[in-house]
Figure 1 (tube, rainbow, N blue to C red):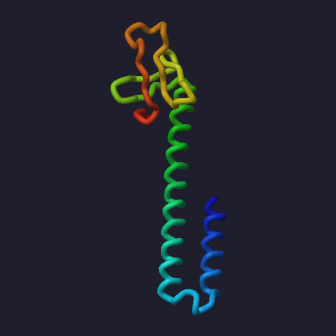
Figure 2 (figure 1 turned 120 degrees about the vertical axis):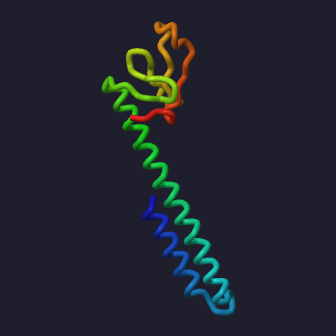
Figure 3 (figure 1 turned 180 degrees about the horizontal axis):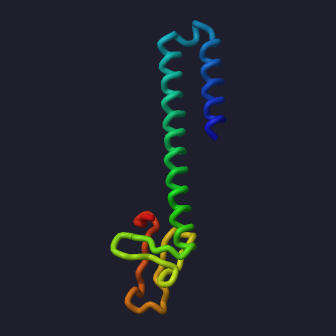
Length: 112
């Protein structure tokens, strides 16, 4: 994805540079290039953030599946008392555990 964004920026810069002088002034060309660069950098930063977040979620899920206990806010989550719901990325207390009945813990509150 990052390569595609870079190639689009490169193409846009080339088109702007070779455009006729009468159609766009130099300051307009620079403004367009800077704007495109900022948009692409913002997209790249968003992608990097999402990749790190997804990797953290995978690490937490792997630890849970390996039988480790996770600290999730006020609860200690393990595969004996909770089940993992992949659709919502949350842990739901098993019905057999009466003291945790109805508890749902979001994966974003968990630490390894």
